[in-house]
Image (cartoon, rainbow, N blue to C red; front, top):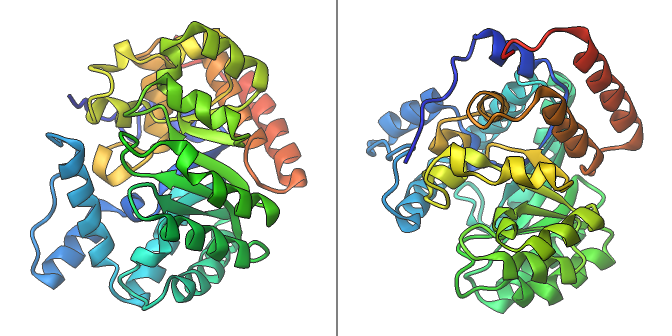
Amino acid sequence: MSHPAPAAHSPAYERFAALPKAHLHVHLEAAMRAETMREWCAEDGVEVPPLVEFPDFTRFLDAYGLLISLLRTPERLGRLLDEVVADAAAQGVVALEFASIPDKSAAFDTAEDALAFILPAVAEAGRRHGVWTGAIVSIDRGAARAHALEAARLAARFADRGVVAVGLVADERGNPVAGAAEAFAIARDAGLGVVPHAGELAGPEEVRSALQLGVDRIQHGVRAAEDPRLVEQLAASGVCLDVCPSSNVVLGVYPTLGDHPLPALLDAGVRCSIGADDPLLFGVDVVDEYVLARERMGIPEARLAACARSSIDSSFAPADLKRDALARVDAWETGAADPAG
């Protein structure tokens, strides 16, 4: 089930666009602008993929695959990077950690060539638009062990050039997070963070396994709410969940935003950031998610400011950027009335 995004220029949207935040859960290809996608589909003579409504996870992955195929030239990839960073700046994002699987690049023959292009290009876009950027190299959990190890080694080779972490993506069911332990160890040895998807399509046992692996953050993690003891453990650990409510509703994890456990997780003291996951495919940007959390989920503005603080504090951004952004969150919180009442 889907829901309409908030109006982009409503008072609530403008209010939350002004809130400094880190966007920690966003996949590069699916942050493409809709008009850019339509332009490239027309140029390539391919049908525009379905957006927002997906009958199952497989159809969602099919749509994502088409977006990857559109990025078939370095010029298109460079344009995507600039537009994604420009959009992040307009949404009040001070630190953007974007995920991709470099060995699936349609523009380059090797994953190494893809990263060698992406990292300086996105850093330059970040300087131009005033957004710090960090790349997350994603491991496809459904691929062979060799892919996981090579992805981690690739990330390690670029650890001083803009890669900040490794992630773990795709369908959890039958592909547990523990299977990536060896790859995570390689990343850790290189000084990188570990930020796997867990507790989305699979249950709380995957969140528990991720915690046992000593991860830095968990992308999604919302199914932890099904186990009160695990929620207590999460709260005590301080590990941040990078939560994407609209994604969870569109993909059928929860029937509506009113059923989503983000308010309960925050009430229990679990640190959460708010992200858009795949903005093009799910029809929301990160500001929309804050507005929906306020208006449809009833989360108080002060608690959403705390989510922004958690996002900044849990990012891999430089310490001085974090200090400045956190001070700006304080100023935002005390500087204007809550338009949602």
